[in-house]
Each structure stands twice: as C-alpha cells, then as structure tokens.
Length: 530
Image (cartoon, rainbow, N blue to C red):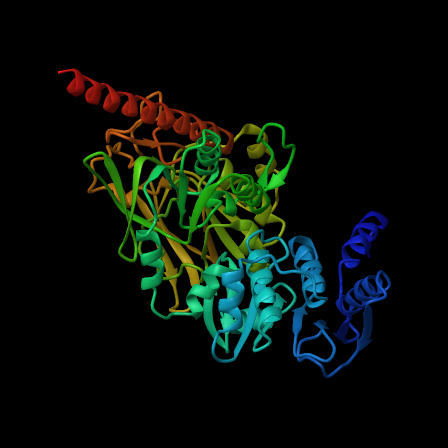
C-alpha cells in the first residue's frame, strides 16, 4: 500500500519512538478493512517498538484502529484509513503516543493537562480537506497530554450514515460528548480556549502590560508575516497581533504561483510563514482580534477584544480578506448545513447529490470542475452574461457531462427544510422570471471582502468597497499607520503581491520612524539653541 520511498521515510520517523506502542485494529470483511489491515501491518513492520493485533470488539466503527501506549490510558483512535491530508496526522499520532515531544508551548501543555473533567471528542474529516488535519492533530495531541481526553477521527466519506444522521455538511466537524462543539479549522490553542472558559482577564492584562512597540502589525497572513520579518531585521521592537496566524491562506488548497516554490498548500505555507517570523525576535500575539485604532499624541493605540490596548509608534494593518457572502435569506441559516465555501473540504460530503456553485470566475469554475468528479450534478450560476474564468477552465467545464451552466442569474434565496439545504431561488435577469432549483448544497465562490469592519469608525480612510486606501508607500490617511495586502486598494489580490506589499509597508514604517525621530531631535536642538 505504501511505496518504497514513503516506507523509507516513515521508518526514519518511527526511529524517534521512545516507548512501545500497540496498534489495535477493528475490522470486518469489507474492502476498506482489507486496505487498512495492509497499511497497519506495513507500519508495524517498520519498527521494533510497535506491535499489531486485531480485536473485533475494540471499537464500534469498522474499519477503525487505536494507537495505544501499553500500561497507560493514552490512546488515539481513527475510524477509516487516514491517507491523503490525514497521513501526517497518523504519523504524528504514532510518534506522540510513542513518547516523542509534542510541539506546543509549555503553558498550553500545562493548561491541557489541568483541564477538569472528561472529554470524548469525535472529529469528522474528509481526506481532501486541508483544514481537517489541524483539528485532528490538535485533539490527538491533547488526548496524549491528558488521558481524560479521548478522541476518534472519522472519515466522513466512509461513514456516510453517521454523517447524514448528524446532518454534517461541512468538515472538520467536532462533537464533544455527543453534541456539536466546533466546525472549521482550529488550533490546539483555539480549541482549548473554547474548553477552558474561565476568567480571560489575565489575557487582557498580559497585553496591557506590554511595552510600546516600534512597529505593531495587525494580521498574520502573508502580508503581515513579510512585514514582521522586514521590520524585525531592522532591529526594532516588532509585534504581530493576529486572530489566526496564516490568515486566509489557511483556507487555500493549492499554491502554484509563489515564485521559487513550485507547489505547496495553504496550511504548509502558513506554517512556513510562522516559522520564518519566529526565527526573529517578534512578539506574536495569536488568537486576538483588533476592534479599533486611534492616534493619541505620538502613539497609535490598537484596541483589542477583551478590553486590552496595545501601544505603538507605528502600525501596519494587514487583516486580509475573507470569502464574500451572498447576503440572501437562508444563507446564514444553512451555513455548514448545505451552504459551503470550500469545495475541497466539503465536496466529499455531497457524493451522489445535486449541488450549485455560485460564481463564474476562476474559483467558481475550478470548484464546479472539482465537484463534478464527486457529486451527481453541478449547476454553475453566473450573474453576468459570460463566464469570467480562464478559457482553459471554461473549456474543461463545458466538456463535463454532469454540469449545467445558467447565465444572467441572480441568487435571491437559499431554501431549506429547517435542517439542511433543499434548493435555491434565483432571478432570470434576461426575462425577470423567478425560478428555483432543487439542490442538496450551495457552494459560494464570488470573490473576497476586506476585513475592515473594525475600522469604519476610525480615521483610516476606506474606499467604497471597504478597502483601506493606501498611497505608493503603503501609507494610510492616519499618520504612522500603514497597510498591506488584500485589505488594501492594491488592485491584484495574490499571495506573492501581498507578501511584497507587506515588505514595502515595513520599510515605509521604518522610514517613518527614522524621520519622526529626526524631527523630534531637530525640535529639541532648536529649543536648546534658542
């Protein structure tokens, strides 16, 4: 099942195991059980610290398996065959149960270890989802640190009955003690914050206690990361405030246009960004959301959710953008219940069903092409009278037998039965006739909207589209405040452009600091000689 190259690499990883582990499989006579047995036996043969056995009663789901540390309560479980994006999750589970170091901050590990109570987590994933491994790996690590936390990662495509019974239409979907707990990407720190809901005043106090930054960067995507590196290299006090480090790139499947990097994926790229920033003396404040900005004298003040304030001589805004929503009735009601924004993550959950893709640009057409290989039928809905995607994509789309294209269609409502999506209403703009489609899912692919709602009452100028207005140097209308990336009026929203703009903003901020310092010194000198 594993090729020779992967076996060689995996064998090298398994040499890092310091404690014996036991792999216990629960199988039936199906083809997937045969595949899983082959995989687990191959893994067992690569290390003298592993053992393999089968127990038909160990778990309810078949095929499934546990990775146990004998003589302890430490265990990690998978239901299905964790290949694709989840193969890394399998490797990490083997290593961590086998005693290898878990790479989390010491304070986070201690907080996990001291969580009160018992927790049983179930995470439904799809093998094509790039966001799922973060959640699976986080909960696996937490279950190794604290044996009172139990976790099973479940391939939703393999256990369709459960997916339908629980009305799961978006992954990752996490259940805690049988109840929905979380949907979407999350780190261990984010999941921990949802579990440990004690007094958060300490987090605010920790931010308030920080000294003034020379440069404070708000946002941790490509623009923010580049700005942080360029600022830190100047030897000035640099901080990054981010809601989630990596930003929107975390939701990107494939990256093939970042010069010098032939191909990568969003999560891997985000990890590389964070590692590069951490190579410098940068204060990273993750899992925080800015809610306001103002200038007070010579300082720029950034207000943070929770009541904290950060002070800086200069600020770079790099809060990026997010998926644009339809803003029609029913969209929010059925979000993650048939309304989806990532075809790679959620597509496998709609196998054999009818779906629509709204949007005829590159992202919409690519989504329709990908979904056509999974679902029964795809209807592409385009507002204009022509598709806007590259011609090669249009040609591919029109060649597919299970794809329909509707032009000049304005989506007016997402229909549901109270539990899930059942259809979509649209206006035929050519005839002004109201029409409907029976559907099981709606994938929205209509572009991006800047994350600037928190700036609307500030002195930072915004365009009519809500983007931060910047000049050629990245300066905004508020003195000492610069901006970079997809959140600005820069015309092309690309990762490589965002990173370049972040570097430019950092250099501009450094220049501003030098000039501001010179102005102060000049004023003092004038007073002395007067």
